[in-house]
Image (cartoon, rainbow, N blue to C red; front, side):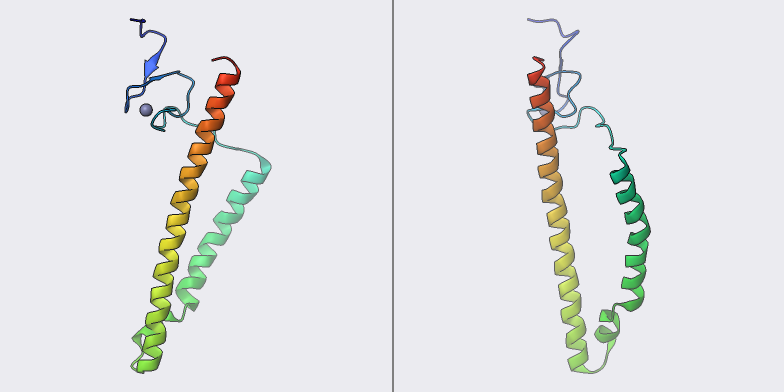
Length: 123
Ligand SMILES: [Zn+2]
């Protein structure tokens, strides 16, 4: 048995890991905080997004006609409102699903590249 003073194990799957791993190569559990990107491009993107997001929410709340149509007593207008609601729910579900899939792929790619980097250093 090797001493566990240097090597450690994943807290979730108990596979041996190295202290410099960001993610467990076996189960993908986050082990260390990944450094955040602070490049100019990232900053511009974050700031632009921070400005635009509330505007989109404002436009949605004030301009989206779905609520008005949904509350209408005219059956034809009400149906339009119902379809608009169904589309917005469907679109939201698809967007969340895409975000989850993208995030999972991104984490997997990050784990693979980090572990490839580490093994290329002979660690
Ligand atoms: Zn693990």
